[in-house]
Amino acid sequence: MREVEVRIRALEDTDIGDITTLDERLAGAYRPDVWERRIGYYLRRDPETSTVAEADGKVVGFMLGEVRSGEFGLEEPTGWIEVLGVDPDYRGNAIGRRLAERVLASFDSLGAKTVRTLVDEEMTGIGEFFTALGFEAATLRPFVKRL
Ligand SMILES: CC(C)(COP(=O)(O)OP(=O)(O)OC[C@H]1O[C@@H](n2cnc3c(N)ncnc32)[C@H](O)[C@@H]1OP(=O)(O)O)[C@@H](O)C(=O)NCCC(=O)NCCS
Image 1 (cartoon, rainbow, N blue to C red):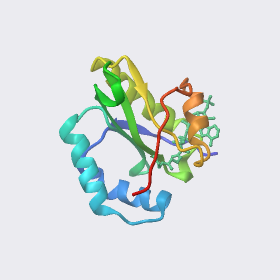
Image 2 (image 1 turned 90 degrees about the vertical axis):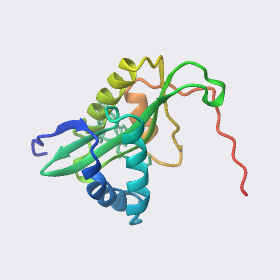
Image 3 (image 1 turned 135 degrees about the vertical axis):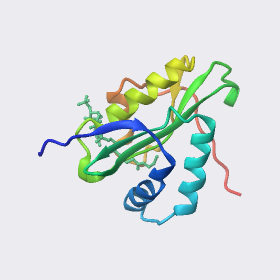
């Protein structure tokens, strides 16, 4: 595998186009409005935490999240990792790990005591990724009802 030079940095609003393109590859849908709204939300809430990886002049990975308290009866400040993705052509280069290191350091500096995320077990690889990063399965279980 070739050496990839990767820069890890804070999310910026000019990343909307690259993240929309990357998401289109991952999810198979072109959703510029969704990403404009979502990235705007994270930048307004906390311009430092959400993180991207840049390589070969484009965004090849992103991790969005924020610190919140009081959700689901969890009073302690919790860092929530909400969306992540690494370009399939760049996986296996520790980009996901480096994104998480920056996001978790930011959560820590904001006073979070725990970091949480939700993983759909039907999506292969994501649970293994978080396990490799030291995450453990939690007792908090999602319940769903169709409307
Ligand atoms: C999960 C994901 C972020 C991993 O990105 P990555 O840059 O390839 O991961 P890294 O190279 O940093 O791997 C970190 C660790 O996780 C492990 N890991 C990563 N992907 C794995 C997989 N598919 N299976 C098993 N282990 C995996 C690696 O082996 C590595 O462990 P190590 O450091 O102990 O060797 C990436 O595969 C991805 O974007 N998946 C799709 C995400 C998605 O669909 N998002 C939309 C919904 S939120």
